[in-house]
Length: 392
Image 1 (cartoon, rainbow, N blue to C red):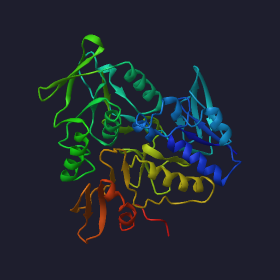
Image 2: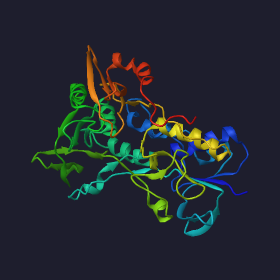
Image 3: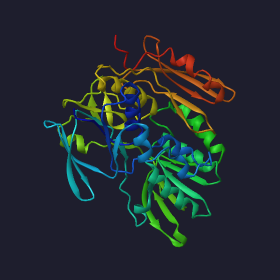
Image 4: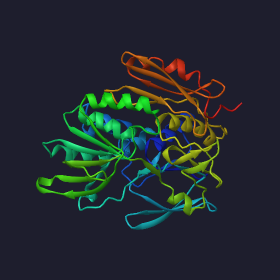
């Protein structure tokens, strides 16, 4: 019997392995990854400064420890060059040598890469992205070399705002730049975004919205001059790009696995190729691409049962997202795309509750801003219909 092979050592890959091992301690399990396979929780990267966590403290276990813990063979620093679906084989490359790896079932947990803007100037190659622990180590190393502590963040989405709050709370001077007219443009109605922005501005974060970066050039003292489309320019010690993620699709597409925004799967996380599944930030499940922690957990539990012979449909209950911005505590449950909703809000002393209801007056999403509003999370979540119902 060939092993079950997981490609990718991020949260999705490790969670799938862990859930499978709860059900089946023995079946051979192999993880293949291009990085060093260190296990860590990526969400901790955007608030590690306030938590006073050095990059070395974020790692939960190296490849050797994880291989022992999960009774699994891990092949780090190994590239999957090609998937051969008909033969149920992978072509691998490590240290310049090519080998083949057979599989009985294959799990694609290949994640997503940061979107990079094409920006002019001799400083554009120095723009940081933080998508993994190695990226974060480099970012922190460079951060510690500057005394002025001026950081420009490209992108006022979830990750950009979390990093902004973390940096500002550790005495950095932060400017956030975004083409959108408001922070968290895809998640919040305009009036909630405005209140959220004010709370972040109150702790000193500066927003330049409705514009984009045209050029980043190196100036004296290792500084960078950032020129904006609105004619303004700012000087910073570091530039961090956080403008979104793009699922890694190249490997899947080359194997004729159907893709749209992500790798397309049905409710069993199956792709169109036999015995190949997708999970995590790369997976578009029943048309939903949700790069958050809770969907990964739901996917991993269902997939583990399927891999163990009990075909199981993934269940997506309503899954609110907690945004790690202590200056403006925020919990968001986005309304489903394509559903017309009306927003109703209630002002509180320290924030607001905004509810999105459909034409039948059913609650389809909500935003909780402030510590008082956050207490409504559980009771409101119970009122929202499942995104993907549990299989009957």
